[in-house]
Length: 492
Image (tube, rainbow, N blue to C red; front, side, top):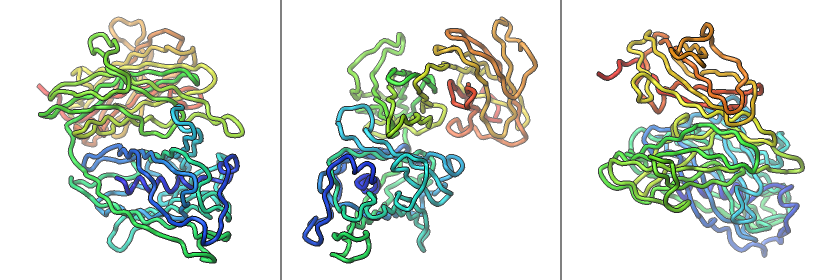
């Protein structure tokens, strides 16, 4: 784990020319300048998923210290047992696949400066260090390759040390640094156990030329070797609702549950935010019968074997400014549900929260879905079988025109509204999408008709799901819910 952390720390130490321009700098002083290239101090490393075969991402938090030597390049070697899904696994070129940030003021919500990471193609990505949306040779890049043993190689290059200044060898300020790579770029090995990860770092050479010209003392390197343990988990988690949409500085809440399916008590169970994003996050236990708060905010708890614990989670989005206001990212909030004995797997549409925010109030739809078996699974009973999902949604935000759509593969989905019909009959013929205006504080109901397409769908709720989304005219999700789907027969 420490090795992956150091990769992000090196990236963060270097920053960019605009960032360094508002902080004092330490100029290069030749060979008598920085005496040693040292490993950053690790605070926390959290992987999004440690289960065999599951998609993986990570969140890393560390510190840099004034005068700490900058890095020019870092090379990460990940064993061949992992699968590299490509930087475009989450969407086409230009998709935001992560972020890193600087925290100058400890205790403030989220990073004080946030830099998105975007894909270029399947094998390369870049960091937008001045938030202008354009690549250039002085911005950090991430390149993927394989060595002769099919190990995965990530090479992060930080031109001239990353800050774009030929005379800067060391960090000009102290800061907490954070990095996040979204789940799905890599997948874990199919079998459990400890797997080695190696990181080799190369420093800026101490002169006033470019980082690798060797005009002064040669660049320094060090290598860190560490292990990550891949293991099955008996923990699972869910979030409801799976989408919120509020204005900046407004707290959005949702309920979460951690289930301990193991034979022993799960100790020190906590919830943390994996994303590096502008905003404050917190959690607290609740009484599952009343939803009343219990316990102490942001305090881990033990969950006995075979039992569950309910929580309320909160996120308060913060407006970011960098020369002008920065739009809030709409990538899903990934949450780490961790106990000392393991952590729950990441499941999109189940335990992630799609979050949107802005300066103007919008629709904020709280949606739920139900199946005839009341277990969140739609059993089609054959590759061309049919089934139905019942959905209800209340808009606790502003009135707004919305479109209800489905996201699914290997099934055909049609939708109709049933609001006001006691027998659940459709108000009009089912269609692929529904357009309507959802007024504030009103409840609307829908029926979702599903038909198999001839392809077998395994009973795998973590992967095979039908997601229902309420989107505005710009395509921003203002509400969502989902159910699992399989072509298997329902249990008797």
